[in-house]
Length: 109
Image (cartoon, rainbow, N blue to C red; front, side, top):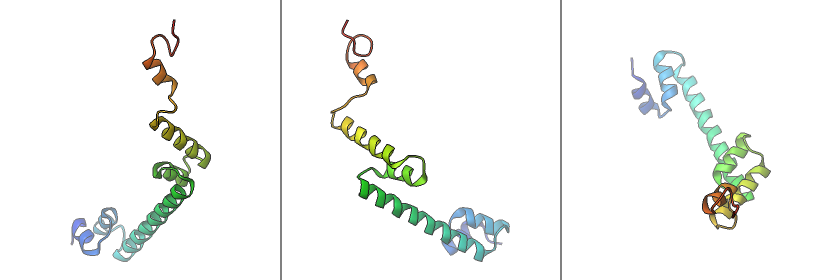
């Protein structure tokens, strides 16, 4: 019987499906089909992320969270704008102001 690594290399599938074939949980045909579907879904997900990032001008990290449903598109746009403004040193959050100025969060007493 072949090891999972041998099956993975021979059939060029992910290790989790190769392990399932080696342990007898999946047949080789089922594992190949599942692996192919998983790769296809991953590429479709990546394509959606790239499309949203380019269309709305947000980073791929925010776009990934939008596609997965973690963030709304409006929230991602807002966060992206804030991040850009902070990078340009045009806006600073209250914690940073408090650290730079003497006193408690910006009071000059």
